[in-house]
View 1 (tube, rainbow, N blue to C red):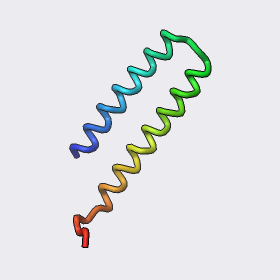
View 2: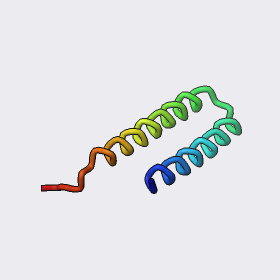
View 3: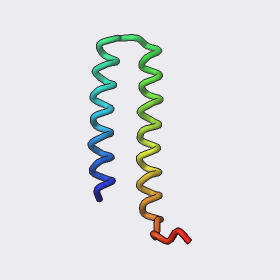
View 4: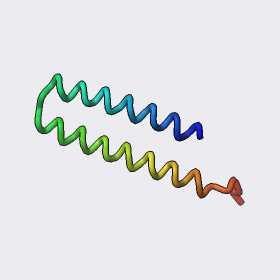
Length: 60
C-alpha cells in the first residue's frame, strides 16, 4: 500500500513539473521527450506494482 501511495504522489509531481516546464518552454521536440518520459514513468510504476504482488518474500 505504501508503494501505491508513494508511486501516485511521485507520478503526479512528475506530471506537474514536466507539464509546467513544457508549457513555459513551448518547444515541440521537448513535448515528445516529455511524453516519452511520462510513458516510461507509468510503465515502471505498473511493473513495480506487479512485481510487488508476485513477491512471496522467499529469496531462496
